Length: 584
Image (cartoon, rainbow, N blue to C red; front, side):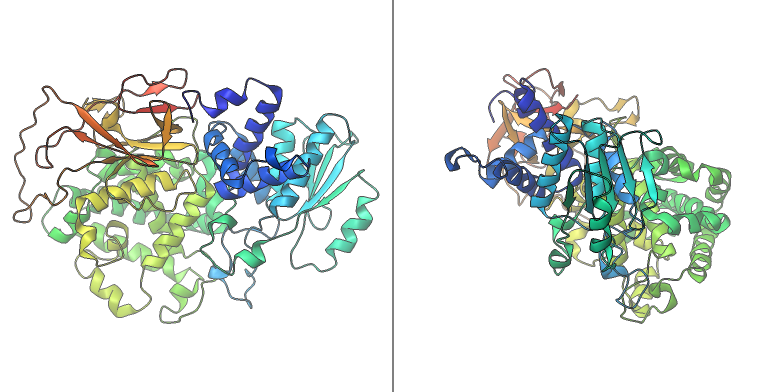
């Protein structure tokens, strides 16, 4: 990688700047592998000599180096808005929510072939430099990404129309010249191709068809290459992610506000170990900050999700009740929401059938989980979450809940149904460990802003993925407090990367000299630790993708975290063990 970052190196030439823009734009919407494949196909269209053609792994490194460059811009929000205009592709996931006889079948977002995306990008480039007058691009939902490239990167006059020719968006005055016309294809309309070919002769000088590869790739539902997602503005992220289901929750404002407020009251009881809260529930709790419980939790909800402010007073009132009343009212609120829900999970819990849409109960619980995650996070003011992050949080939550009534009742006997928000779905004893619970906090935080599914490591204290870096705030200094309150246990999320001596790494891990050393003793006992800060030296060990660090010569029992300065992009590390470089 060298001491100079890829974005800084590319921006020195016009050609490099174009590559930087396309790479950064692709990484905002597609996973790294798909973005690299598109760039590879883009070059192959130009038929370069074989010896001058980078391999896919090389393109992947370029994409990785450019990722995050546009994260603080409005491009990701524009791309998601345009893709969401598709009338029939309303979900990011396939038929897990519906079977083939249901009206929601085939409403998941399609993903175009990399070769066709490359061809469309080349055509837009030809229009921008005057070689072509106009183009029509016909495809599924992700053709909205190309519309965002045309308007945001190339400053073109565009129009977006549906399968029936109805105008969905346009940025030019009526009657003015349109340079790029984007037409959404309905995958269920067999007559569509014939219609668009006839229409194409009347409008542009060139037509590009985007082939959908999702039918093949979705045979494996866990295929990450199928995920296509932009970013959501905080002001409407819940309605944009969950659509009609969220609006239904808001229509039931009395029950919904009761659920949110009573949950905050129960969180306070767990955090302060009130009488009646079991040791098991306290073992799982990690959100020990004002924004994680009580009225602070309600304020946290309203801060991150302004769409909820119309029910703020009702939610605050619910959060002020006694614990026994909160538990009863929380369960009653969920039961009332379940009676209005049309998903098969609520209609028939015993049925082993796919769901027909968002479950109102699970969606309310997902919003609670999102608020808990964000209660321990500081986010760059101009960084926005991805739609995929919210959809994936919902999917993972509802998959944790068992279908059979007996299992649910067994898990809910101590704390009630709120156990599904507080505790993980598995009974695995390893989930009790503090390292694993800290990993879940990192998973949840970074998962809302990237394509990352999980960290897969319980000792990660800094992680970079998709141009976004999440790190424990303690790495930025040993100050106990900052402008946002208690700082040591908070996760900070910024566009950026991790570097050591000019070399980029994916993560920083805690390095234990003796990993068998563990805190042991009776449950609930607090150990007195002697913290010695004199003559500390941070030792680092490099692997292919990871930096591992600890205080030299000290074991786990008296281990200390050293302060590491967070530097802006214009500066570079000298003799520091590692640096978190923020993208400006």
